[in-house]
Image 1 (cartoon, rainbow, N blue to C red):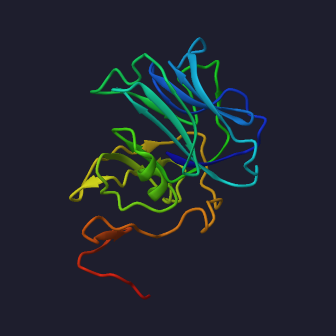
Image 2 (cartoon, helix red, strand yellow):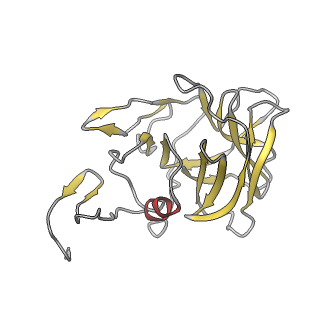
Amino acid sequence: QAWIKPQNRSLSNAVIYELENEYSIRINSNTIEVYNGSGVGSIKILNADISTISSSEFFQLSVGYNPATKLFEIYINGVLKSSTTYNAPACSNSEMARAKLASSFNANLNHFKGSIDEMRLWNRKLTAVEISKNFDRYLSGTETDLVGYWQMDEGIDSYAFDRSNKSKTYNEHHIAFSNANTSTLVPTLTQLSIKATTDKNGNYIIQGVPYKGNCTAVTA
């Protein structure tokens, strides 16, 4: 998951995210595409149209895969845009893998050019309800099955630090950048902001600030 804003819509076969020898997520003009494999001869699994989204705006991209059902899905701004089943493993290496952001392991593929913000990586496919509830808010970093959370707020060009953790033990899946620059371009407050949803007991966390109790209304 990530909020992205392509530099322009003329990008062709540009890699947004790639897991080596497993899969890649690319942008091709006004289309988001998911491929099995990361080479030039990889197979396109599904795609989603983004032509109705203004080129001046960020949009939130979620790509999910369920290995049990073989279901792939693409969500744009919390709404399901494309889905298909594909009978091939994606992520066969469960122990260790290398990934690239806005770049490819294959020199014949293009690099993504544009802005990327608020990126999350999970170790399972999220449900439609989970995506709808969380795509437009900052996370606490402690969410179940969250294995990587990069807010891109460091203000440095060389690293993005992973905020995902379990009881303050951080996963430390930090990203090292090359040929990247920080930017003041971010999603608008109507797109992404500080908010929370409660669990069945009424508990919630707003960006690291927990509340527990039987509160039925909050006034700020």
